[in-house]
Length: 345
Ligand code: XIL
Image (cartoon, rainbow, N blue to C red; front, side, top):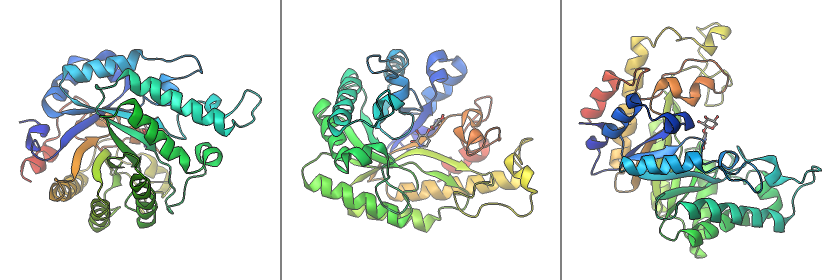
């Protein structure tokens, strides 16, 4: 059985695809994709800078190909993402002379972008990350141009426009570190107020770029329970598990004192030691057990890539590392030590 078959009555199992994947659709990729996944996400190709690089120019080629490919594979399709402060061209926020756009300009640019992009794939892309990463880890509104110019209404405008454009699409608010209590609370306070005002929102996307230890299972469980208590569905939108020490320390105190600092950049470039394979397998097992407990509320679990080789974690937060966060090795082989634990759940 493929991974998706292990969870058919629980949730979709998804994978994010790069533009190169969608362009080439090699047999090496298509075979494991067809048997293991029933949902797809676009890693970059639907982001504003990819699909709408200039005011009057849209770049639909790759996105069209992505949607056709997904339909061919009979997959539940994700749109990622409509409104974000990153990977969005400068012209969206500023005039040519560098002055910031007015409220009227920015809101009509947003509305137009959503109408055109979402409208093109109406009824074909099933679910959208409408707004991405609008809150800080403290649960405050992020000071992006979207927020600074439009205020919190920018989130409402995005969801309203999305709903009018494709009333049947599921609409998600998506963010990272959603397990940090203040952040979760900030997001839930705002999104439930927005829903009570009559604005359509289906659920909360938890990206889940996880470490081996952080966040703890309890932290994740409390978060999931909070979201469920607020009446929202959950999608796990960008799952990966980083086994590398993190030089920036951003995911917690993960730096290993036994490594010389330089080596922390790429300590496992010659392969992952067995003890870490075991840790990774145990972590995946714990995480999936937790997800299964909440299967009635979790719509989808999407891995942020298929092969380790293609993971963004190889280049984050610094370029040139060797990460092993995903299910497949460089030859598109499903890692046995991970398959075993998923089969045994
Ligand atoms: C990442 C992609 O994986 C990279 O290829 C790209 O260079 C930067 O963006 N949160 C998100 C995703 O919502 O869109 C990000 O994807 C990872 C963090």
